[in-house]
Length: 184
Image (cartoon, rainbow, N blue to C red):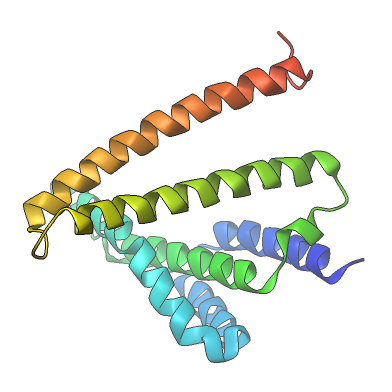
């Protein structure tokens, strides 16, 4: 079995295992093992993972603290479990992505390879558009844009991304249906 395919199977197994474990000490131990496996990339991957999950985990944690306060229960054990699990899964995903070529891992299935290529091309297109939106904002401002200007530009970009994603999904669904992927 190819190395990338084996790592894909190990990754999927680890994701399932991480969702089934409900002991914070086991999740923390798995997090330490992941950081050791990451080697010299550990700090970069941990920082990237924390940056990605910060807003989501903060919103969920604050909502859960409010709910726990209203119900009169202690939220800390559950919050520790949730936040450790999300950090573990995010770090695991970033480590997996940095070490595995998904195209080689999925080369056993032409359909999965095709779907990966489709998703990858979508992501590259959105990445390019995001860079163009940033450059457009910078080119239209003589000074550093104010926070409100950046919020407005972000809102406009988000609206464009949503419209574009819906249009592309509609086009892809029609193309897939025309090729017999869906029953009409």
